Length: 259
Ligand SMILES: O=C(O)CCC(=O)C(=O)O
Ligand SMILES: [Fe+2]
Image (tube, rainbow, N blue to C red; front, side, top):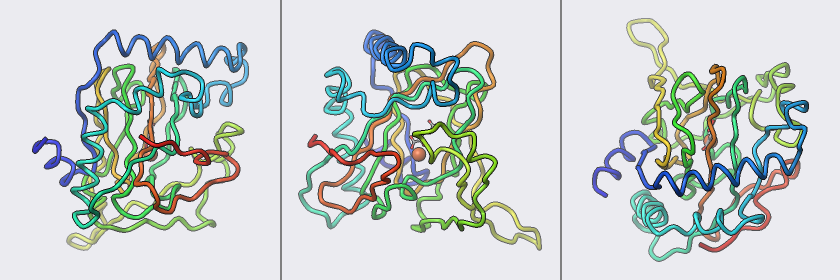
């Protein structure tokens, strides 16, 4: 656990191997079934056809059980305690889950902090991303600005800086993926404005879980592969009772569940 916390403090994200191949194969199979049940013609209806499947835990207990997996919950709780040493006893809830499919050709997710969408306090919400497929730069793995969570700033995004053309690439019911990129903090070094944090692509192995700080800058690029998907199961944990913004358009975060 010490290594996990050290990496978390330094980078604002940490990847831990947790699931067996059998467990992951079941999640992949069930996830793809949900995709096809939702829209058998999803291939003809891109980008909406393959948009993330919201809250699969309401459809199938398998997704629900993963939320409660002890190894994951222990790490989430420990990381929240680490970030909030004065918090005392707290309960954990899950606001939402997603199956992320990302077939070949799908665009990436603009640079963001999760706090931008949920408006949470620093360090009181943690997303996890369970890699169902291996991910790397070719199939659109996540990128990071390691350490950016330590600024304790929610980087503002001016409405007049929204990229209206890129916003058109969003699926109909998943409008926050693209077109509202966060600023990347920069500073002068020898008279040149350079990004304060390097942009790092972090490949992950199937079965590993990435824990994501509420305030670390991250995103992903397009899946440039011809045949490889990049499926992930995402879960949003938060400290019960804190403020969480609800985006009426995406219709999520309305039915949090106890962990
Ligand atoms: O997997 C991605 O491309 C984005 C996931 C993400 O933003 C998150 O897990 O918070
Ligand atoms: Fe995110």
